[in-house]
Image 1 (cartoon, rainbow over the protein chains, first blue to last red):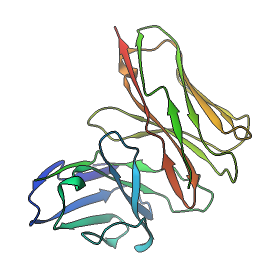
Image 2 (image 1 turned 120 degrees about the vertical axis):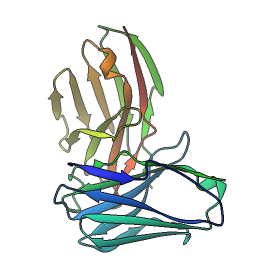
Image 3 (image 1 turned 90 degrees about the horizontal axis):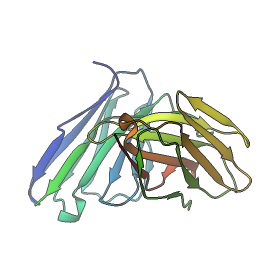
Length: 116
Length: 110
């Protein structure tokens, strides 16, 4: 399989549940990202990992906990979420995080999360 | 904080029409401008990365121009086809991250 894959594609969870989103990239990239898209809003960056180290946390609430065990895998652990956290969560990867902003980010298809 | 704006929000055209839409971004401290094409239920697909003022890039029937001095980029589609129906996103790099616009949703009717 090529590109960036995400599982599950759809997830429904209650506010007291704990669940995890998984992302895997098969492109040999060193940087991975989590984005959130709420209804009618632009894609919003949540976290960035470069060479397995977190380099960006965009003021994300602690009920979202990322994990990057290696450069190919990225997880987003979810616990005690709120209904307003319902959104599409996208993973992306790029060669690295050069400060010039020219690295193309390659996206997965996203996980559609519904919090009841 | 960057503010990236795209217009129009949605566009409906007939097959064969040519169309264009706009991405506006702050012109100060410009680094790079990205365009993506996003079909429903699929992954956003990178179209162009543009850095130089006056740059023009082309991919098949799709092309884009960049004006960094005034802070805008145009995306053009020549002879639209139904398979061009998608949301087109632009993103400007600033503060160490991509800042996305809300997108232009294009619908091409046969």
